[in-house]
Image (cartoon, rainbow over all chains, first blue to last red; front, top):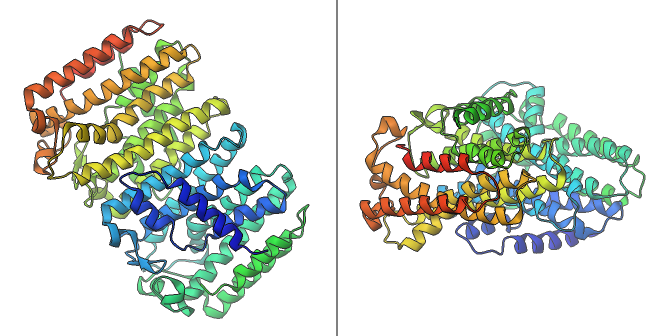
Length: 284
Length: 284
């Protein structure tokens, strides 16, 4: 499976949804259309694809989850928050458009995420409500997670607190990306849903521990943002709590657990196995 | 009709929806539960009430529209935006909790608005989708309106530009408050909907022109925020473009037009007439 197919697809759809002219269009397009990894939409498409779901039904979900992600990055980068100047190898939104536009572009993208889902005429109302339950919950939790993240700067915290923070800040939206693909897929039964939920939690946490490790090991240019940014901000991380080797082992184990879980699904999971392996092998 | 009944009702429901503990709870409660005028929820309840709709079906809509309003005030008050220190006679959210918490509390309230609607089990999925179409559209337009507002500071603009800005910034959410009440009301027919839509546009614009006038004529303590704030920020306003007398006449005419439109509805409109009269007579 060439996952670039999904990247091309979601980029075209995001572009389409952001084609309306308006006072926030430039800032929203600048942040949402640049070369993000599109990991969340890829997950949504992949989950739907292994169940043989028509991907036309998945476009709105994939874009919605990416819009929420894009909005969160814009707000997280603000001076009052993480104060990051570079994102995806370009000036952060507020550096390019000013803080006010950046706040509003983020606000607009959050609204747009829900609007895109609500207005998808290919999906029936009951399914849409299920999708929206997952996405509104994830979006709310994400704001909470960021608040916890800021509150523990320069503090001694235990692994449980760090895990709660990451679960809310990034894990819930990753789980949501998986859930949206599952919700739209008629062939995905209840047992599959439970399995996928557990899988998504494991890769969500693995992904975050790995992020902490990559922040230490990957240079700026490849990372697309500043290396050592966690350390410079005095943020507690898995390596700072567990050490580098134990952190690497922790995310390796989680990816392996996730991979084992996939084998419990009722369909051919080769594509999701490959995606999980690609994630584990990523360098940025 | 004593509209305080609706205020008491929506305050209790808002409180309930905000009862979950969490890292943003304090800041969200601080901003959303203080003594706002609750004009939007009152509108939603009143519209539903004149059609004999069970108000239990309206609570989520009323709260959702108020959460969007509360979020917008928090973000508008930020230093990078309007830089207002006082709101509802208390320090603005960012003055009390810091900018990061204020941004996130606003973000959380926007998500919560949609979450509350999506999770209302009393309303069927088709109706919910209609409600969400109106609310997501309003929320997106509002962010655009605020961007226009900031972009025209200290600029010469014409009345049409000012009207577009206000239509997006405040008018669309007011129309939405009316629409939500209409959508849930089975007795509200298509002709009624069209009439109410026109009514809501007129009171929305009237309300804003009146706001500009009150900003000049009402002292801080009654206004709950700084008097002359538009002038101090060099914002174009109706009085600055039309003069004070013509502005007063403009909103008076719009309220009268709105009142005439109400008489076209298929039900007894005494309550909405009274609300319109109360609005016109407001001092803050």
